[in-house]
Image (cartoon, rainbow, N blue to C red; front, side):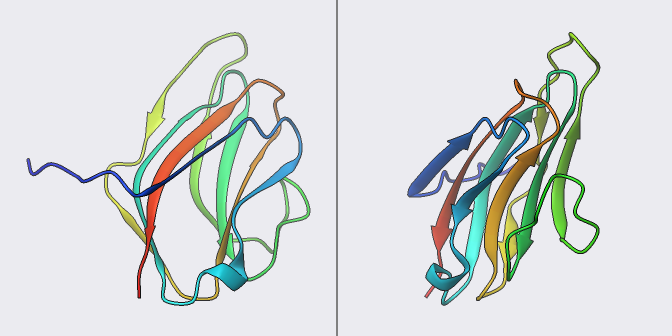
Length: 112
């Protein structure tokens, strides 16, 4: 297995039933590569969306989820993306959750 480099940019979120912007769509002019991505849903779902507009909630039927981690109530379960993700130019990244204690952390690079 080859090592995966970490990204220059780091972000984390505990969305807690809200939508948290990680990367603005306007800032993504050449694409974004998500190098590392992990989540601990701890009793709910933590979702990473990549889209041109922000999702309205964790259950937005029009949003585009690219990573979803589900957990069992009262149990800490770590989910890790198995490979880097390439996000097209013009798409932003948002984390949402239906739990107040789930978390997500990631590293990424902007492409030019």
